[in-house]
Picture 1 (spheres, rainbow, N blue to C red):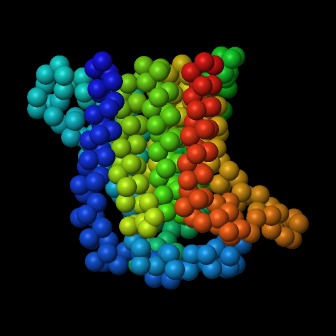
Picture 2 (cartoon, rainbow, N blue to C red):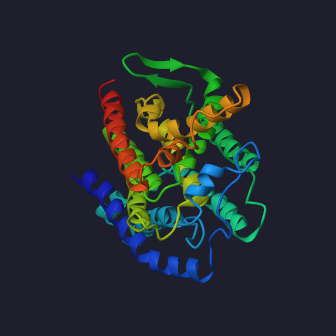
Length: 351
């Protein structure tokens, strides 16, 4: 019973903190006009994305970026607040409630914080400078470096050298765990481009973190489950203000924090927890995979076939371009996310 309380309190507390800090944050963002000064974007090929720019010409200006601050700030405030209370009032209840532990949550907390801060810097540059923030190559390099350091810790310190295969067991891959984690993290980060329609990214990421909280709890990784739900609580608070019409956008500070953290969680719920957190990720996070995959497919088609497959990418903008209202795209993504989460959970729990 205490374990259930331990994972539920951070969820509620993080949601409450997010709701409480948002008015102050949004007041600051609006007073300082923390939004893009010109709508539209440039594609990976250096050309103007005409379809996207037409669809979003009235959305990207006058709505602040950096809404992702609500997510990771809420989670971190709750994590450290509970830790401080457990030190000030060292009763059995509060000590048990503390989930900031070296063996389960230090690494994902660090990934969340680093991703959030780097993304915040990118957002500030995007707003204040005319160069569009940090380049994609710089952001990918940062993600790759952090992933390499984490993977090295997994391999050399924690002796992680296998991945779990459902209905088979552990597959030994040795030192290849390092490049696998680096590629895995970069791939997940690329899925952060799902942040493009009001309410879309918040709902999808919320489902993913909730799913991994369930996997971690089933594997008796209670601290990791509590961390995942603390982030979920922050996501719900963000989503409260991000549903149409959005008060702010998640932007890079949110998407980088979330993608870096979930990459760590997926590996920690794999062989470390006696589970299959890596293999089930493409199922649980299928909307992220499809989103980044659509961009890759579009670029390859334009390069080798000389024409596009989708009217606009990422693919959720294609659905907008063919006439779906943005709220319909969002709702259907939420439904698909839930179905994928159910399937992934079943495989993770019975495999």
